Image (cartoon, rainbow, N blue to C red):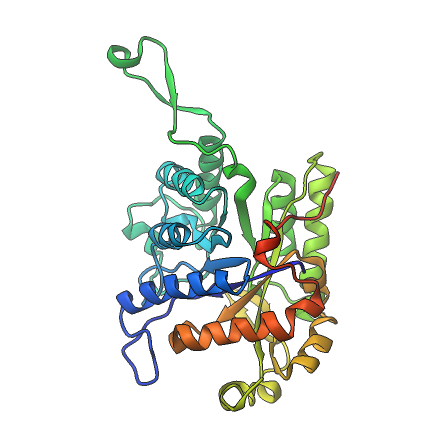
Length: 352
């Protein structure tokens, strides 16, 4: 690990204890956390995307707002569900954002996770999937998205405007965007697929596999397979790799009241069924800084990744979430090899 950021699920609910009671609360607080995180030297601000739920659903305007108010922090998604997207419109928006952010975009995309709506992407007008989870249209859209950002000529031109026999590419395009695309992977096979395409890897918060090993070891194997597939495909570069964890340094009585019990009740991996598959999710880390450092140094996936995303309880408001990030930055991250954002952009491990 050389960098860390926060991953917000963007929840909002009008309930007791929630400081994000409306969509306006959630969105404005997200910008506040992003700006405050940069001041702490945090490297990234990342957001989950969900539809038909009281969560963040439209990330591009949010990331643009954060990028406009900052100069160093990476802004990204973890992840955009491609089943719901027009790939050409996404290519235009992502290119514009990458330009506005001076290349600080980390565009995480994938098939997405289970949604509140049943085949909700069909309500968006995207029908024709033969897969019960819509994986086929997600992959097809991703192929079209990559061709668009690579500058392939997509649409026939109007002869009266551009002359006869012309094909037109998407505009605008950002030269650096292709290097800033991440595939959100929940299996070892999909990580290998991402490696063969030369993408960056955003390992999921839950893996839809149960191989009888601890989550961090399963995730570490996923990362190693990704890098080997990247190498075997002949790519030469330094692909980025991220993992996410729930980590809460306990440095005062408030932390202990909120999360002290989790050190006992959620200190083990969890297993269940997700999307019809046996799944494995990682444990919650909640302890005093010295103990956290000791435990996190044993996490093999964190050791292999260049970026660690801390999942934050966004409904607890900007002040407390920035406290969590500051506690991690001050008391834990330096011992794990962290380099604050003012030292420059994050890079992956060279392969090839």
